[in-house]
Amino acid sequence: MKIIYLDTETTGVDPKLHSLHQVSLIYEDTNIYVEKDFKIRPWSNRVINDAALEKGQIKLSTIMSYPDQSDVFRSFKDFLNSKIDSYNKNDKAFLVGYNVGFDEQFIREWFNINDDSFYGSYFWTPSIDVMSLAANKLMLFRNTLPDFKLETVCNYFKIKASGQQHEGMNDTRMCRSLYKVVK
Image 1: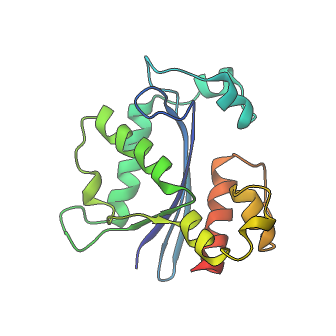
Image 2 (image 1 turned 180 degrees about the vertical axis):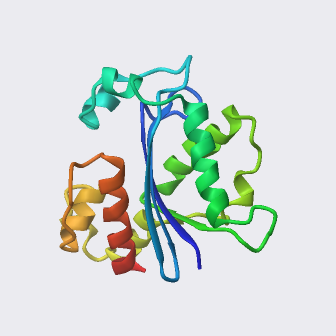
Image 3 (image 1 turned 60 degrees about the horizontal axis):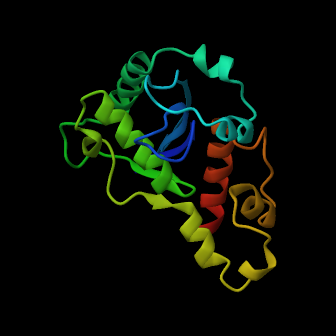
């Protein structure tokens, strides 16, 4: 079974107004484990929200030095094509993330701005939302948590961050660990 754990870092919350600047993923299939981290220069004509950069503790000059989104998209698709036969309707990956609908909207928009309508050739629908799974698991204890952020929920289950919060690969690793606990 092919699983892609995924986290995005963005310049805001609206995929039609803002842009990706990082896509981090972990691909798993039987005995295969691959981590990929894509840094992306924000899409032209998109808003860059200072608060989003502050939350991720990243500078504008840093994200503006990243490779062009179309080049990174080709690399992203090359990776997907190396793992998934997009012409075989039975060969897709489960997209797994924390509040994954947010990430999925940005990934779909990334496909759209690259005139690629084949998102559905790579991923099963629906995606698997670890936040929802955790909410189900924690129904009796939800009132004891100050919020339901990834880090808070991971702390509850004694899953420690390996790096900075709101950094794509760190959040992807935490999400994967949390998924293993709550599924």
